[in-house]
Length: 174
Image (cartoon, rainbow, N blue to C red; front, top):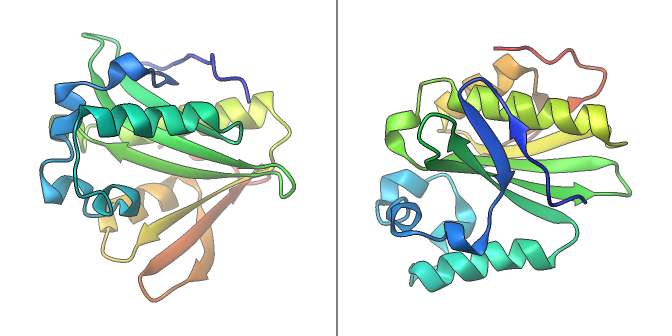
């Protein structure tokens, strides 16, 4: 996958994270357990420091089937969140994850704009046919957003849901 993509929206832009993006501000997102209560990969790590962030970013750079994007504000170029993509080439599916780490940017349309940008970009510029994502059942704001965008229920699990969006679905510009 092309790891040099930059996608511009109204309030933000999205680009692959770089090692230099491993900052104290980024690390602060993981110091508060409320901030990552819905993100399994972060909970499993006991020692969260700048080196951990660098290793995490590097793990995406080394894997041709994954990209970790940063979400940045256009106004002050602040790193406010991430989008992870895992490409399942045989299934022609992309597994999507999103995290708005900077709390002051939640409930301001950043998640909506970010997801619309990334989904539209890959549907337009690749042969991938669908996106899937997992969401914990108690993450009601995320569930509401995903449904408004056009994701449909794929599978129920004890801890949550798997949702699906394909090329045929009209993506709602929420």
